[in-house]
Amino acid sequence: MSESSSFEPVGVILAVDPDRFAEVVEAVRRAGLTVTGEQPILGTLSGTIAENRIQALKKVVGVLAVDRDRTILLPPPDSPIQ
Image (cartoon, rainbow, N blue to C red; front, side):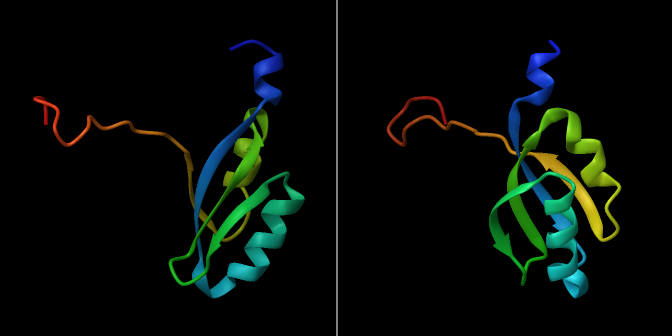
C-alpha cells in the first residue's frame, strides 16, 4: 500500500454497544469517522475514514467491531451460474 493510499477514505461498518450508541457516535467522529448511516436499534453505523485511522476506531470504548465496507456483485437472475 502506498503512503498516499493510507489517507484515502474507505467505507467501514461498525458494531457498537447499543446502550451507549450516541456516546460512541460522537467518539468515533472525534477519531475521524464521517458518519454516513446510523442504525441505533441494530447497534451499527457506517461511514468513511482514512485507511490509516481504522485502528483508532477499534480503540474507541463501545466499538465492538470494525469491518471494511465491501461491494459484492451477483450475477443477474437469468444467468446460467447461480
